[in-house]
Length: 271
Picture 1 (cartoon, rainbow, N blue to C red):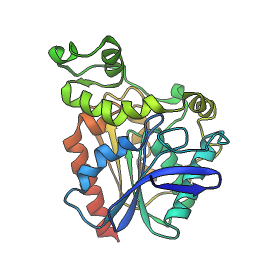
Picture 2 (cartoon, one colour; picture 1 turned 30 degrees about the vertical axis):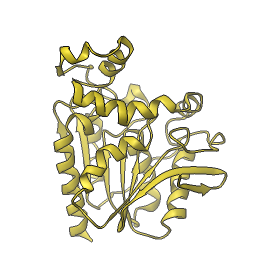
Picture 3 (tube, rainbow, N blue to C red; picture 1 turned 135 degrees about the horizontal axis):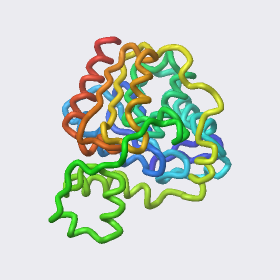
């Protein structure tokens, strides 16, 4: 298994393809399978990209992380991983939810090295009370399929998704739930108590091609706060997708793929 030694940390990652590096950062509690599941189909017919999927500390297979105390140190860990694995190389960054929050902290320190950024249902404000959130709603429910799940599975699925059918369950369980089941919850609770950066990640503008993919029914981070970031990302596409909650990459997979392909094409054009 590939590990990257960063101080006392052993960071698990998967490295696929050759070309320009694209660093993928998953959200809080899942692992690299979340990003791999939605991003690998994008690259099926697109050569020239090296995809790097990381497991954040406390999640997936990454080891020796107990000394990390807060999101500042989580971001610093990713920075050290970048400097170790792809030193001085231009790269792209893609982050989902908490991974999107960390990505903004990384952009602050590595703005000149980053060729483009993708944000999938990103955390904008770390504190929930600062977020503008819609009520959780279910847009579509396949009652016949839902009856095949256990009570526990149905409750978890209904709480986290807005489209409840077999396709979404299979992807949710293999790409999201699988990582959450093995996460170090005690460690994550410690990080949640120090969830916000001690610094502002959004000083200045990021003028490289970017994309913000936002779920209209996302009751975890919402979409309105992200739209307020538009002036900070002048080369960014902002898409608010209906029939999509916090796992937009699954519930609107076709539109997700099209927007990521468009982002990659804009990055190539800008190089």
